[in-house]
Image 1 (cartoon, rainbow, N blue to C red):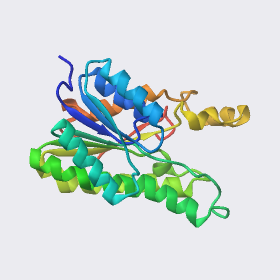
Image 2 (tube, helix red, strand yellow; image 1 turned 135 degrees about the vertical axis):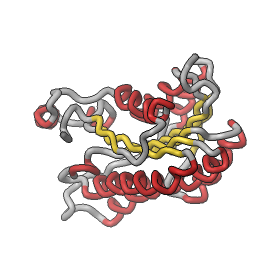
Image 3 (cartoon, rainbow, N blue to C red; image 1 turned 45 degrees about the horizontal axis):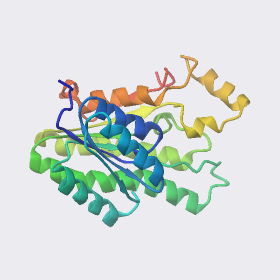
Length: 248
């Protein structure tokens, strides 16, 4: 029997990259999967088909994580369509990298609102359902940038450090309700963002990583699945770095 058989997972930003890998990994283990996407309609439709091909129910919901009202409408729709939400993975995020002296107020607001407020919006909307179920798992996708900082990413690092704060505080608030809240802090992952780097930038990047390679999205997904599974039932408020050894 697959470990998430009949469970319902909601993943934000699930149409590409790490979010897509997480969605497919849950489906591989029997979960019915709901996910949000902002604008990539064709990509979202493709992910739905891939999940359904694994014998699981799937649906993509267009949503702006920054919008409190929009988020609650999506969560209500997922509960109506799937009946419950057992797992929430807050993965939706953006970057607008530049040095602080060049960073605009809009650069700051866009990243903080999408990454940090988005996580707040979904945690708040989903936690009520999980409390009524008397069980649930929340996994927040932070970053090593939120643990050790990263030049040129003041806004992104602040948003990901804030997600760690949400994780630890919400874990304390929900522990007595049989809801575990943990975070994964990926290092550098093979996604659209790393593909844009020059050869020189990639070399400098690999020199920072003791394992001398970037992660595959599936390697992040496997840790998310562990934190969402019964195997982690006595873990809450933890931040797991999946980074090839950068933070150690």
